[in-house]
Length: 178
Image (cartoon, rainbow, N blue to C red; front, side, top):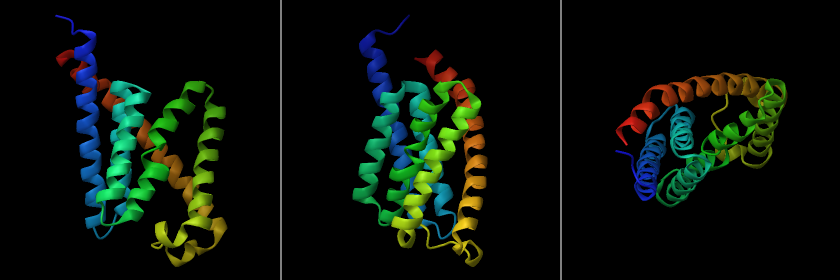
């Protein structure tokens, strides 16, 4: 039996609520772990990607906005909420839009452009808050951009693989169940 339009909307809203709650749990956990905070914030951002896959861009924006706002209000470490809002939570939405270009070179130019713009904001505007953990070798700006871009490419490729897994295995099951 097919679900009605209202049933699909309610299911999508519920999924966005669950993904936002899980994302907030990861953001809160990022404030509690002594190491790997950035990695935990990145995991919180992956749940926005799940919202985009399952519910579209509007669901992704809703998940991102709700988690970011609640993160700013509830997290003891506001830097992690800021990191989520300025990059890791927003990236899955931007990634989805950029990958609609369907021209791999243009996509990578856009992706690296966005990343370097955010890295520049972090480096020159928010370094003391968001990047206090950098090792001594990375206090030279050239090394920061080189290491940052390499890490970003690895992150983006890994993110793509996780999104494909989610779309092929988890979202497929969610759609059948609904």
